[in-house]
Each structure stands twice: as structure tokens, then as C-alpha cells.
Image (cartoon, rainbow, N blue to C red; front, side, top):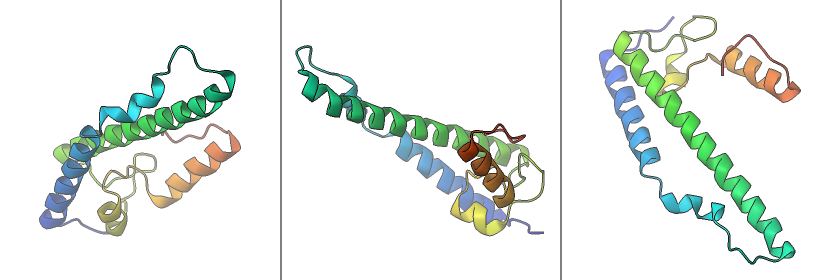
Length: 126
């Protein structure tokens, strides 16, 4: 078992807040691909649709990361930070310092990805 020191917790909080600020500063121009001119030819629509897909997927990933960061900050405030949300074991210090918004231990994260890649519902909340 590990115990995060007060310095670790302070550093993690700073990392989370910096990452949150970075995500919130993302330029709105990233969504410019969602606009399209009215008179586009069929040939020009295909790359535009691809660009729209990429922009929406990127935005979704940013939103999910922001949601995880807010949840991690809440867990820091309640003293529940560092506990796997699926199996309730402590997440290794090294993982938390690398990915401070991590809410699952590595085995549970692998289970989640394995189930998702197979299209299966697993007993772990994403």
C-alpha cells in the first residue's frame, strides 16, 4: 500500500487545476469544422464530414477528461482520492502522479478497455 504525502496531494491538485485550465482555454475555433458552406459539392462534403467527426470526437474526449478532473478534485476534497472507483483498492502513487485524474487502478482500467473493445458491458462505470 502507498500513502500519498501532503506534498504529493498538493502537487496533484496543482496538476489537476493546470490541466483543467488548459482544457477550458481550448480555442472555440476547434469547432469551426462544424460549420459548412451551403453550396458544397458532394466531393467537398466527404472531407468536411471527416473533419467534423474528428472535431466532435476531440471535443468529447476533452469533455470526458474535464469531467474526470472535476471528479478527482472532488475526491481530493473528500479524502477519497487515490481509491479505485470499481474495486476500492488504492491506486498506485506512480499512476496518480502520471495521470492524476485516474479513477481506476490498472487492472480495472484494463478490464474496462477489454470489455469496450469487445463491445461488452462490464461492471465498471466509465
